[in-house]
Length: 184
Image 1: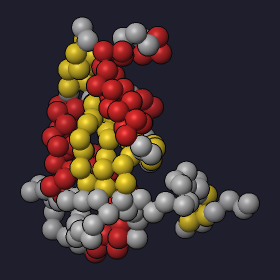
Image 2: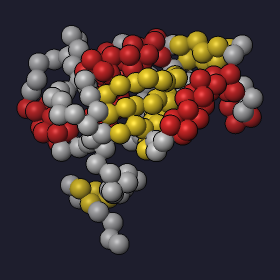
Image 3: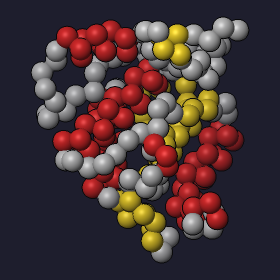
Image 4: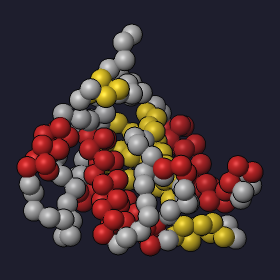
C-alpha cells in the first residue's frame, strides 16, 4: 500500500475503524501531551494537583457539551501528562458548531476553511479537536509552555460491561499513578 501525501508531505494513515463513522457511539478517549510532559500538574499523596493549564483543561472538559450538544462526558480524569474521557456521541441530527469562547477573534477565512474540513470529519474528532484547540489557545495567550501529542487514542466501547470496566479504570487512575514504576 503506497504512503499517502498531503501538500507534498507524508501522512500517517488513520487508525480509526473503517467500518465506523464516529458520528454516534460511546468511546474511551486518551489524549496525551507531547513527550508526555507533565503540563497538567502533579500527583502528590494520591491527589491530582492541577497546574493553571490543568485547571483550564478541567473547565474545558466540563464545557464540551455546551460547545458540542451531541457530545456527553460522563466520566473523565486529568493526569499529569494525559487525559482519559468517556465520550458519548449522540447519533441525533445536531448542529455542528465550532468551539468558541469569548476570547476568540472573529471568524476569518482560515476558521471558515477549518470549519468546512471539520464538517467532513466525525463528530468525535470535531469535539476533541475543538477541546484541544481551546486548551492550546489558553496556554499561548498566557505564555505557558504546552503542546499536545498529535491525534488522540480512541476505543469504541462495545457493551455495558466494558463501559463499567473503563469507568472504574478512570476513577482509580490517580490512586494507581504512584504504583506504576514508569511514572517515577
